Length: 59
Image 1 (tube, rainbow, N blue to C red):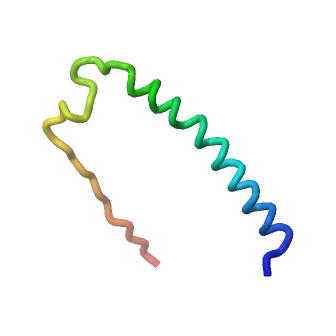
Image 2 (spheres, rainbow, N blue to C red):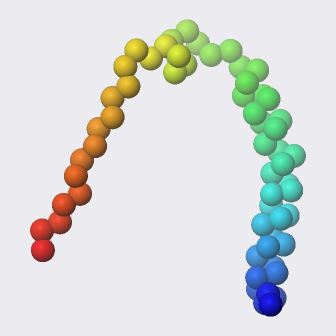
């Protein structure tokens, strides 16, 4: 059985998700309407370099 606190968390998450569903599509459409400058998209990349380090701890 859910407590009142769990119910309020779920209600807040539902309300937040519902409010974001109206804001995000217009923001994405506005961002997609902007033409990128030449050489500023990831399609122009020739190389991708991944740097990884070990995480060692000496006890």
